[in-house]
Image 1: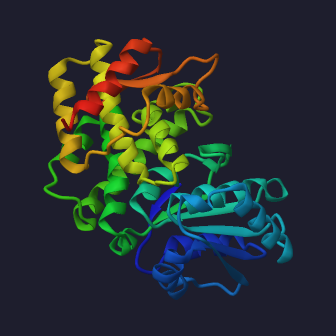
Image 2 (image 1 turned 90 degrees about the vertical axis):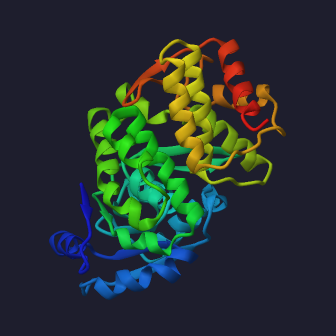
Length: 347
């Protein structure tokens, strides 16, 4: 269930009162501890004991070592299966917190309170939890739904511009794969600001939620949410391996550009549609050079993506603005051409 929180956090307090958990644990990183915990605690109305658990901020913390540390902390505080975990943070916190909650004592309840745009519109929704391992993103994880996703848009005011822009990529993706009107509303924005984006957050969340409800375990239509991620995740993983972390949304924007061109090469969309989409994505996102990586390296990681099987790369490709196909197998020649097209964009 998705709720937009009011100033009193009524939905959260009502849930805690109704569920009456034995203990509450609040998972944060150093950023949300500083900027978001004060707001949460000022509005939290409960006598139930709670503990704040802080981990380091950033993708580097999304490892089995951090998960092990969190399991040990929960055990130390004698957390039982009636405990409640509140994940207050961005995508790393909701991914990590969901994974730890879904595996500790075979599962305790958790709520996601996303504080970044990326987490609000993507990571917190859909029940995917996970950690990275050996430079592969989300290679270990579970499907486990949060009991509730509670969004407080004012948290966006604490974000740096680069974080807003990162999350905006997922919103654009939602429009491209499922709702042309949403896409048109977003590309009509003059600039990316918390104020400009706020009115469109709930719509973007509902687009993803509606897809997930139809296919929780990603066996068919949910795969359209992977548009831009097949190439984007591979590039993101290579930067991670090179110890050069790039924002997830910028990797997705790169992926959407390359995969839009790929859809054109596969005769799924006309050239003018591909050109319009790419032009609008590039209006919001900087060019990221991938010259240090060979095409073979990128393709090798794409083959290893957990969405694929039998050594075949499964793409989700646009068939128009607002519609997307999934499990689409393309020629290796066209994958190469799409990467070359991206490399030449800034020349």
